[in-house]
Length: 278
Image (tube, rainbow, N blue to C red; front, side, top):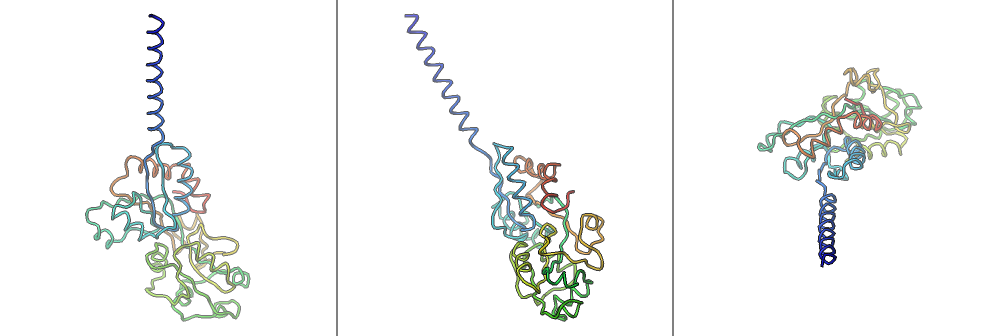
């Protein structure tokens, strides 16, 4: 009888342990989802940070929307309650705040950046390594149409810009104080502007600093090159901060992720992506 009771006890305990292990496994397999979308400038930062963060956190998953929908799109999606973090490469507009009166838009600055004016390598190598702001305006409003007029080769200027709603577009337009351009093409992302300029022999465009490369060199503006030093000092003409907006002060899983982005580990990722740490 004692042997039978002992076996029953062991069987019950085994069942309890199995159930506990099963429940622990189920709980452990669930993770809280943080949804983020918005600026294409912030996209590589968010994507790289999310990948590293997810490796270190089993209980939180960060979903970075792709393709990015632009700063205005991210703010709108946050306002409509569809995402937890709206990434923006500009400050929120008063019209956006007014559109969503029940949302407490809270700004979390994550990095600094400059809008770099890039040209095709052929143009740079031919001697156009810098422009004045006045020359840049003349190109984008159509007063100057040939590279020869600014010290380059005899080629028409192929003008590229970002689509309206982009934070990079808004920052650029405000910095050079124009409302319309004569651009040949407006692109939805920095990567597409870079590709268009790189694949031509007469192109110009503007992108976030992290998108500058040997195939798309950045021009000096008014004699000042975009760099960490000039952007932090505010001497480069088109400087800005990068943002992750939340509804109210971040808390819970959202706070854990933004804290990571602003931490030394997250800032290392930002610097490796070609942007400027806080």
